[in-house]
Length: 96
Image (cartoon, rainbow, N blue to C red; front, top):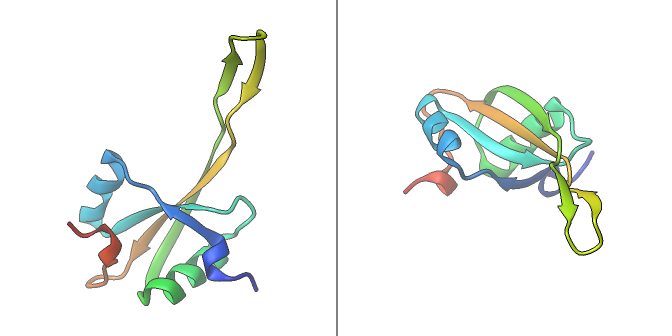
């Protein structure tokens, strides 16, 4: 089994993720090869909460142009996990 800190890379802080906090859904950037059960186990072990559901999405990196020598590059692909917690559980990392 992987180390839980290797599965979860960082929390996602955006307007959309803050609106999901009202529904007890937290957003994390996760390692690209991690599965839903691994993400669930990692969140439960790191934060000590119970996870009801995990949704994942893969986001392709943008294609970027290098103006100096007129070549194309690419930003890295990222994988996100939307984690729904049980009623009454919360993660203090996101509290104001």
